Length: 284
Image 1 (tube, rainbow, N blue to C red):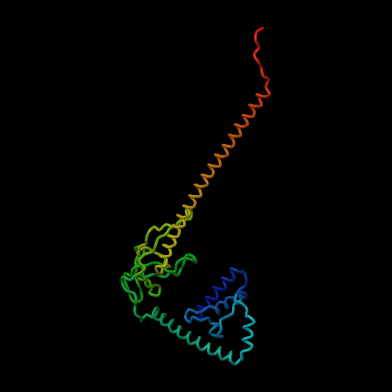
Image 2 (cartoon, rainbow, N blue to C red):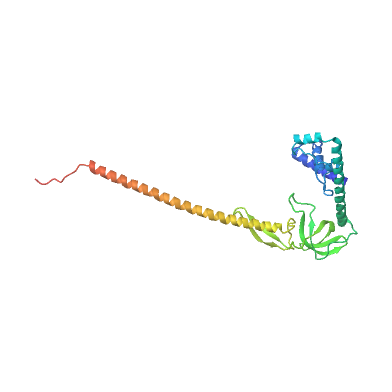
């Protein structure tokens, strides 16, 4: 337990030093504050709350209001102390109960004498310990169990027979029978569902239930509706713009031709008025 906490502290200090370019002595108080304020997985309560009976006040939390200060001043010190003691008893009882439940889960997972929950033919997910990036899935599979020997499980991955310890595996629920294979076309703004990935193909572990399928279908329907409505709206706008442009161009042409005809008529009339009238001369 101590070694695991030390590892967490070292990782936190490394991240703080990489982000803020400071010394480890400056990053240590921040990391310790985070550890004290974070709820433990086994107890469900933060270490600070287990020690003091109150939730740690962080810098981002609002300050104490004057009304709270007045209530604290008015209350007797002995009453406040008794309330904290009662709360600590309740928190310690809750933490002990959750710790026992966590111990039972750990014993069932790592105790070699515990009963095996895997059998041949089960579908399992295998944990990935070395991830390629921060957002890579933690589990891959599902795979069919081919053999079970003591605490080891044999599966076939890409035609190869591989063994895994039971602590690296978890059961794949029966309702998880497929996963949607989706491609996104950002240029056209649409999502295409190519089909369903069979169980023998590696799938993403984050489809722990049918929520992913339902969410993807809802998103696809929404995209189709938006695309259809947007296309219809844009089509009518485009047609209206074309008709309006044609009418405006025709009106401009008519005005231009009318101006040309009027100018020609005016110039012809002026030429006739200004030119001398020549009469034919007769013979003497």
